[in-house]
Image (cartoon, rainbow, N blue to C red; front, side, top):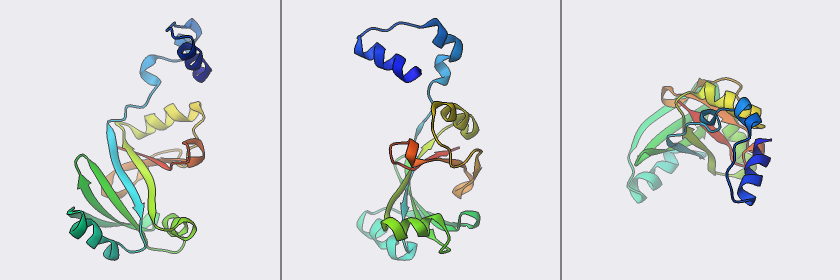
Length: 163
């Protein structure tokens, strides 16, 4: 309903308020409060083999390497302005990163957006038809609370929300 309202508004080149919409939604809850791109996740077979490109060619400094045991990955982080690059190395053949690399090869795995409240963001997007991989926030690298949105409902892009 909301999508068709905005389409009609844009097509007719005017802005009106429909009382029924105001009852269903307040303007502040129409969109998540994304502050910035938190990081880009890049799947790699080996962090050790990937480090020279990021450090010696791009001139970035790896500031953190850690294992996230429950996700079966080892991560390495670089900062580029306010955004980070996260290298993801599988620590098990059963990890989602290992399966990703097997099916698609190394490369960009996901985009992560910073939000002030992951649980609230999940509650906002699910009624809009976004398929959730995580129904509730869970622990991620660097102590962040995270949740993923399914790429089948996000234009083919695996999307992570971070707090």
